Length: 91
Image 1 (cartoon, rainbow, N blue to C red):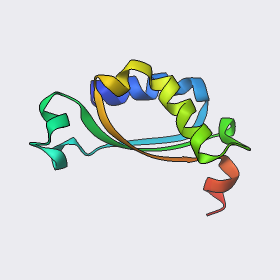
Image 2: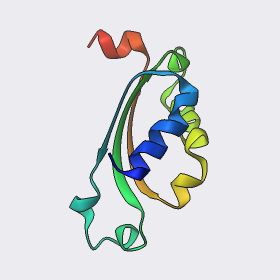
Image 3: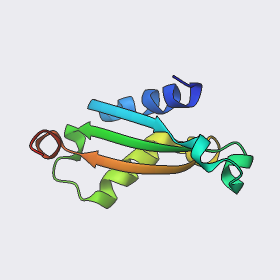
């Protein structure tokens, strides 16, 4: 696990996820402007009771708030799949 993935997981702990998966896609974007400046590309799947009753915009805002300055430094792109437990485990 990379240092950035560990930091993402640590910061998202505030959302008390029951499931979290982070995939580093940075190598697929070699040469991209964001990759050259050190920002990585990640895919996030996160399941949390905190998302119950929230729309997708509110879920993404909560994630961005938890990640804070990582979104302007070590993360260039983040693909988010945020679900409540009912949504995730019923599909």
